[in-house]
Image (cartoon, rainbow, N blue to C red; front, side, top):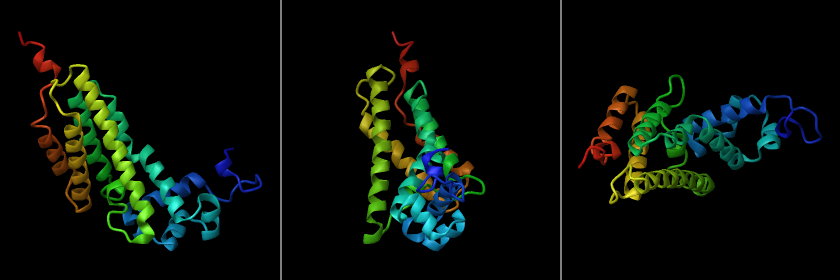
Length: 210
């Protein structure tokens, strides 16, 4: 039994902490940080406010834990995309993953990392900053992967890794916003494919060049 599953003096909690966090993530995903009330969180998690605070901390701490779960779950397509052998495949998998994650049947539309705290007051500033850092980290990892493709000759030597990474990230964020507005998965996949129409030619194109 993990420490998270135990009470403060070693006794098991009276609820499934993992499932409670899953439900909290879905509430934040659907309503955003400020839009998610404590009452909604209590009801979805199936626990009292006292138990919620004891297990996860305050609302901000719960949100950060929910974001970590989101990153390791629905948003894990980014890490999987980085493992593709070519930069073009990385970009294609990243955008396809964004489409799939933001249009999950029966789940919240859009992206927790994009819409979770776009417009917040002072009370939501910490959550806003956490999401900014989360998005910047994703962009940095994508930039490093594309720069590796440049260094290895998979992309032309003059390809701008930072510019390409910002382009892919911006398209993926736009996909999330459009998904939240009700645009279908098929339509968004078309957007993803169109976005790659001007992608720099890869090593396979140069392989037959004299």
